[in-house]
Length: 577
View 1: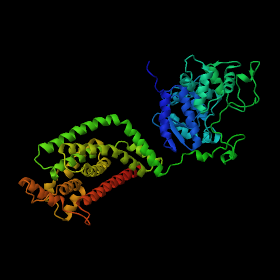
View 2 (view 1 turned 90 degrees about the vertical axis):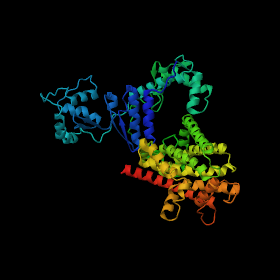
View 3 (view 1 turned 60 degrees about the vertical axis):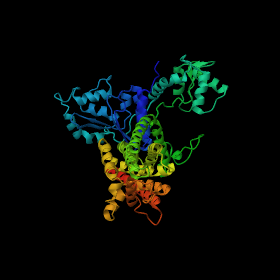
View 4 (view 1 turned 30 degrees about the vertical axis):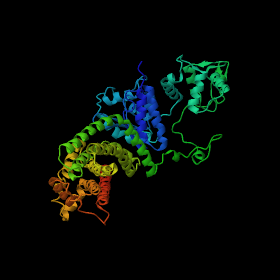
């Protein structure tokens, strides 16, 4: 038997709950009750009505609501064919308005359906024999002020109150959905052990046997050992007022009603007493919070960063199986590229050319992989920022979690090159330049995703990495690094120029390379002289070529990420206004 999933009502409630998590002032809903049964629809609309106490306004369009649901709305807007206003006011006043205009409703008709028929011209008008639906616009313009004065418009009134029948219907529907979880043995009755487990789940405390016995008798009568779903529902519905009415309070077949004048109306709009809202307490109860404290406070940026990082890590973990395929393909491409460089190119392992292709490939991988980070969900980001989310916290959290993948790919490519070429240098000195290249390429990927549509992002990223890295191997840089503006431009835009210098400086110092070394071939000596002129050209404040390159790459990477953040903030500001 296939396991039951979530129901349509549960999906609706979850989708609405996701929107409520953003703490909106105004919530727009497009047919929130479509596809639901009448009880589920009533439950959702009632929950939205209760949210009005927290200062939220709900605006929705709805089709064919039942009468009890329609009358819960504070105000309704009825539009005629062509989009003109046929009525705007309280739901309770709509029937009186149309009857005053000459329309008659059959007592058995649904109010909402009848008004739709009036707007469509199906219902005849006793005052206007040749009535046309377009006349409703003129009627409203002529009689609107009269309606306000006569109290028919009722702009200041609220919707119908939630009565005991509505409450029972909602409870019955929710109980029917969850009954199988409560009734564990499937005998369609709630036994004492099942009631005990239910109370443990709800209250977190295991009740005593006398409590279970008392509850069973209150629900099923004296000596009851099991209660039916109907008895359980009746007990829940009677838990209101000053005293519960249950099976234990029956006298000769009748309930004892200590408060016969008590109403069964549940007023969702009735405010709490003023002494409660000012920090006081209801009699015999714990102090109630002020109503304004029910609004969720926006956390600080540091707290938001932790929450956003946790969310990003959860998303990262869920996508791990899909990520394995990308890692496998990348590993094959990296190994093939390194194998071709080492065994089919007659370059010594210390040469800048042997590192050039590794950094070029890593730049392409990092830039393409970073395109999705800020280009996938601008509507979601816009909504979260509007609800008070810190954009810097969001940016840092996303970049930090994305850095996990980039570190994995950088390590994978560097390890493949290191294992195949077997250089005589420590691995961490070999790996750090690749990590710096990844940092800069990721920044370029973020920038491209901000200004280029995603369908063109990969092509633009590959082209950019080719222009910035692929066109300038160490030999080509010799004609550019001659001082002046050209050298400054190349040094700022081409991170591989500094990353290759780090790898070469490490190999140069470990191998103690000199052009006068007799063990070098003429080709190797020519490569070494070129690399010395290009890759040992600039150092700052006597800190050495390796540290100069590391500092420049770090500054360039941070600068690219700052520019990406500035573009992200500009995009959010532009969409806001």
